[in-house]
Length: 272
Ligand SMILES: NC(=O)c1ccc[n+]([C@@H]2O[C@H](COP(=O)([O-])OP(=O)(O)OC[C@H]3O[C@@H](n4cnc5c(N)ncnc54)[C@H](OP(=O)(O)O)[C@@H]3O)[C@@H](O)[C@H]2O)c1
Image 1: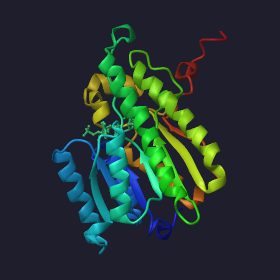
Image 2: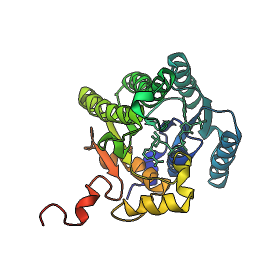
Image 3: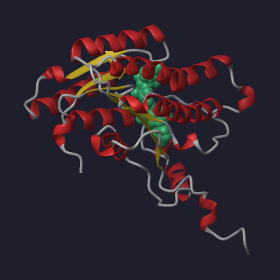
């Protein structure tokens, strides 16, 4: 298992971290001992609630409130991303870990997609992570001995096509190549880049899972018949940013209960 100490003194930035997977990732890394910058997009109750919960973790552990920073930015906008990284380094002292988590998706036949929708999803899901990686890499390389870790939260749809979700599917496929390209480019400078590709996780993005019929149909398509808890993704991220995975770079860890294993082959229909 990862030792708590190795996270202490590290600074992590998690994007889109006031809900779902991002929030669990921020909570997990903070609990393990790192200082965490929580990027948020909407000024709403999610932000207040996340800040309160994470401050409670610090209080219980007897740690300073300043180990947590809430930082507002639309990651699709380059100037906002640049300001966010400047603010994090100024307030928390450095940057060691970036988790590109923020994402959006919507359902629309590809021939009916509106320009704004294409633009929005590609900007948030792919351009945003590229901008954040660029700023993180500058911070990692500026250290006397360069070092850093990036984890991109992609999706099982970085490999499985998702008809009706073209910009989402394309952006997650792009994240796979972002991960591999940066991993190779910076491997000799102590910088590792990996992805976690979840299958069906219980979050706001998957709110239709609260409908019994949808949940049942989803489970029938997942070989292990389980919906993923965001905490499972967070544990994988904690491993990927630790020195225990020091030889792991350029990889996508797919956590999908077997969804990408061609589930229809569970029954023999092909060689009867
Ligand atoms: N849930 C799943 O089954 C699943 C499966 C595979 C991959 N994923 C990936 O996991 C990641 C997290 O998703 P989730 O399931 O946890 O859904 P979620 O709860 O909807 O989280 C998405 C987060 O992204 C933020 N965000 C959206 N646009 C943003 C922007 N322009 N700038 C900054 N933040 C922005 C949202 O903030 P606001 O609400 O304030 O806009 C929200 O906090 C996404 O990349 C998603 O594609 C999820």
